[in-house]
Image (cartoon, rainbow, N blue to C red; front, side, top):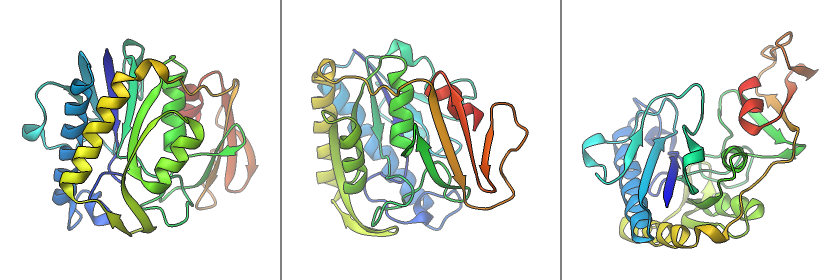
Amino acid sequence: MNIFVMVDMEGISGICRKSQVLPGGEHYEEGRRYLTRDVNACVAGCFDGGADAVTVRDAHGGGFHLIWDELDNRADYIQGRSPRERMPAIDAYDGLILLGYHAMAGTSEAILEHTMSSIAWQNFYLNGEKAGEFAIDAGIAGDHDVPVIMTSGDDKLCAEAKELVPDIVAVETKRGLDVEGGYLLPPVRAHSAIREGASLAVSTCEAIAPYRVARPVQMRLELVSRGHVPAGRPGVTVIDGRTYSVSANTVEEALRLL
């Protein structure tokens, strides 16, 4: 059983403010420690549940946030960018975990909610439905027949995940009150929940169906600011001064067109 873990930062336990997730931020090094500890709890749970191999990709920003010498030595790690594939060699894996994810842009009372870029992206739609990063990454895996078996984050993210994948193991490590505020589980309880959730998800992996996005895959993006719509780019349909759409055969192909 091979497990791929995509890890973001905003949904990591203990994180509830921007300064924890931005390089150079006042509390960024603190955020890196929290990120690394959640990853280690998840890796331990995967092996508890019967995984033979685990690969973790740092998917936050540029992908250089994990504390290298504090990571669980049993897993493999991907850091930095991967321009050809968001999840390299995902076909070789049996299940996907989306660890430390956050709710889509505009979600009320969700901690650090956004979709891809809080600076540039206002709203994102997948086949006409408003969506976030969970749907994008679950859809990419689904195109390869790989199910997303577990996620972790705040209560809003967990609810969003359950809407798309009802059987997913959703580990709630905090409850959002505001974009920078919420009820947070203490470290021992959060890490225990993540480890137990990962173990359960891996041991029941075969019972969870992949999340498949109907084809052709249509994406529509509303930008924060006017004047940035890529008019004239091949495959782009301009809707208005801030909104455009693309269409492709897979989720990843469509995402590249954006």
